[in-house]
Amino acid sequence: MTDDFRMTCLVVDDEASIRALCRRIVESIGFKCAEAESAEDALACLETDTPNLVLADLKLPHMSGVELLRQIKIQFPRSEVAIMTGHGTIDSAVQAMKLGAYDYVTKPFRVNELKLVLQRMEEKVRLVYENEYLRDRLRNDQELSEITGSSAKIQDVLRMVARLKNTRTPVLITGESGTGKELVARAIHFRGSLAKRPFVAVDCGSLVPTLVESELFGHEKGAFTGALRSKIGLFPAAHGGTIFLDEISELSLETQAKLLRVLQEKEVRPVGSNERIKIDVRVIAASNRDLEQEYQAGRFRKDLFFRLSVVPIHMPSLRERRRDIPALVHALVQRYAPNEEVQVTMPAMNCLMAYDWPGNVRELENCLERALALGNHQVIDAVDLPPAVRAAAGLAAPLAVVPGPALAATDLEDLERSAIERVFRQVNGDKAAAGKLLGISRATLYRKLKRYGIGGAKREAEEPDKFIAAVAGGEK
Image: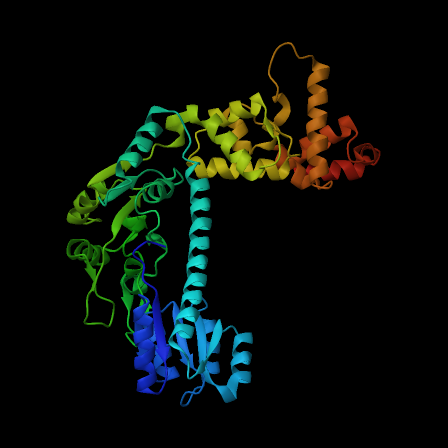
């Protein structure tokens, strides 16, 4: 939580004098205060501006304080609730605590007593927020460590991150899918002065076209069919921090025009509202397309392009920085097998270095996760890699996983037998699955199984008709 954060409290009581007294006490300890005279009014207030603390009377008209508590805990679980009650209803207050109330205060209460309860509630709320922040920071630190590499292009990116981390300048990150554009955006945010402020990531390609304006800017209750309650938009949610607009080229031209106005005016108007909300948000956008070509083709607004690309950053593809692959492999293997000493053989590394990685780092990550899942968690060999990756190094089948003229034919046969046995055990004797993992046809697999006597293949060979039929079926 930021240092300038002020706790907000909602006082719910049908007596104006009690509400006025509570307001004075709440504001005397530096909290912001709102009032509601009924549970229904309180729920309406919670929908538009959710407070951190709620101080509610047990006996309210229509809906009781206990029912209000139950609704708050279902819809707004992060708000802490204290119940005000008379001496004759303490049992009900205790029951309310069993339902999730933080504490109760008996009427007539002392000023210092109410202050103490509110301060304890504030402490709990702050601890929850700080724990969430620390967990997010730890997760983001782990993610940021994945921006790995010593190549000139990735070092240029890291230097740009260091220069931008304490600014509010709009940034446009371009690069192919899977290159780590969001990691760069998170690095700019979480390594700088805005680290404790909100970071809101938006996948523009996944937004429903008819609801995109509501998602970005919010809407009022009843603004359209299905708007049963007011909703804060993603831009207001990022107030004071950073909003990351991933794949921004997926937005329609109409939405781009509205987004441009938001960036120029620094305010949003929720759908169905006549009021504008001031926002202070740093915008980082990303696209896997060339936006300059997009605006020249009329598919992207030229004025929005220049508004966003104040500082452009290009993420290089993995094939442009092959020298970083060993370091990335080491980091990713440690991520998926943190307490294991997994070795990557030279034939496997040669395959990884030779492949072009059209899916970039994301594809490399998936490849290594697959290898660990199918392997023995001790060694990643060429046989553990997908066929397309092996083929890049000329290994269509896993027969030559260890190069070198010094190897005798018997050594190669032993390696081949070992590889087939290991895969065969992993798939519990499923020949179709084994053939797929090994990258060989079913007929070839049967010949190898027969040759090495693996999986009862000798018995199959003793039944020629059955074995020939199986081989013929595998070659279809």
